[in-house]
Amino acid sequence: MSAVNQMTTAQNNTKAPGWTQKLLSSTDLGMMPVIAALIAIWIVFEILNPHFLTPRNLSNLSAQIVVTGTLALAETLVILLGMIDLSIGWSSVVAASVFSVGTVFLNLPVWPCVFLAIGASVVIGFLQGILVSRVGVPSFVVSLGGAMIAEGLVLAMLTQHGGSVPLSDDLSTAVGTLDVPALWSWIISLALFALFAIVSLRRHVDRRRRGAGEAHSLFFVKLAFMLVVLVIGIGLLCAYQGVPVLLVIFLAALFACAFLTKSMRFGRHLYAVGGNVEAARRSGINVRFVQLAAFTLAGALVGLGGLLDAARLGVASATVGDSDIMLNAVAAAVIGGTSLFGGRGSVYGAFFGALVIASVTNGMDLIGAPSSVRFGVEGVILLAAITIDTILRQRRMRSGRA
Image (cartoon, rainbow, N blue to C red):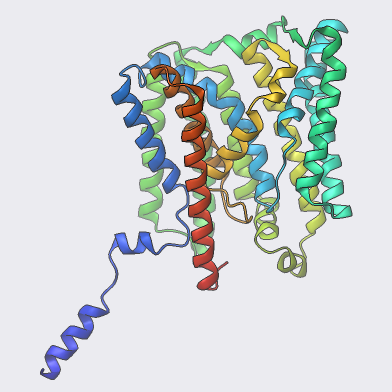
């Protein structure tokens, strides 16, 4: 073989890998798996039942993701630390119970009861954060005990009233049942997107100045894609009755959490502590404060989720704590790409994870599938997400990027 042929062969062997090879060898797929799974789920259910993607059903679906999504946001903040909170289900019912007892039996004003309810969940999160950050008790044990205590509080408040308290105040009725008119749906949605785009652009420019971040073209393509999806989604919802008030509140909480974790120093510290506690401590980060703040903020989101759930159902019930509300929230966070090992994930992933869970539940109901099948499908999706996370972490460890 001539020298020229040898050089040509060497160049062919060392050519840049294609995009498929890059994807398969990637150590961080982000939200790509959950988005792909969501598209596949929607296609399958639309084939099985043509009513799945109708405006009416999508409106129901958008309301169904709210509670799971809000609790998944709370769980994501904790999992980013490499920890877990098993108390979010019962803690959310504590908030709903405080609100219902205050408004129905104590005749207190509605808004003070809202703050008291969320405050109750914040206290639970704060106390758990103290035990985890100051004492060093494992989060699994702390939150398991917190769940038991929260269950006791709920039973103490609601058992004497038959286990449930119907809500009749105007605020709960409005939040749980009303939809934002079409015009205001467009105004609010586009305003939230504009705010998101401005914050994202500032963050992108800052990262590019530091020599990091993605190319400008890719950033704007992704932003345009999100705008198209938003316009289609709002258009479909407005074709029915408008955007549910529940969804607007959830999206506001989502964007607030995104700003906190992506654009503020606390967010950078949160990822740093979750990625490597000792390295974060040596770099000057107050690890204890970050852990305490994460549990406390999670408590506030849990309280909000409990109130939204009570408004959606029209009742504060002790049976909600015995449901799969906590498991769905944890599953949504993990399915959305948040690593159980900490330091990797996104609050946007919690939204997509909740959408996957709600889509499976909604689709199974439409085709009349039993609950056993639904739980089986959700379990398979969760195991697939955890498996992908574990494989990617092993790749990062081998490449020295863990």
